[in-house]
Length: 176
Image 1 (tube, rainbow, N blue to C red):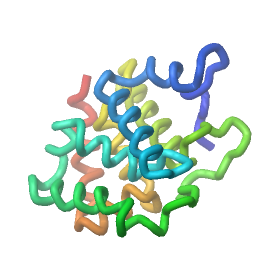
Image 2: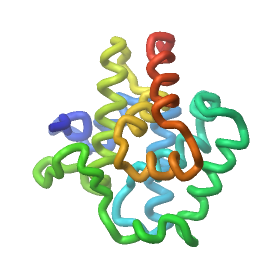
Image 3: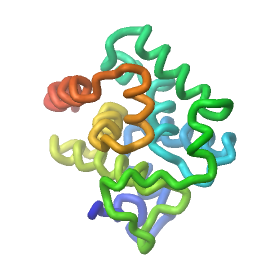
């Protein structure tokens, strides 16, 4: 089971607790994902919202893919979410099954898979003794859940997720 203390250690709001453990760039991505979920009328931020924010905001995330055409294809799928592709997700909770659904201690406004991805990003940062998770940490955590909406979008855009994960694992040692 994933540790949810990253979001709520008791004192401040869950968002404030989380924000202290993310880089400025990743905090911006999380804020963009929240706005996108609200604008789309979704009850929860899911992994596709996070992927969309990563692709729009961070050059290092875009560089992890196989060039501009692949990124453009991904953004095309993500933009279509509210007008076609992805409508089957509207009003549903993303639960990839990769982690047990936890109602106690769950992060309000976040799908279980999105919360697990943020936990995974923090775990990845802590594994390299960093104090803040980066956008590449979150991308790697998203790719680690093969049943998430983000990975579904990646596959539809013909991204080799195994190769992407290997590339991100290779970059892990180079992050500060």
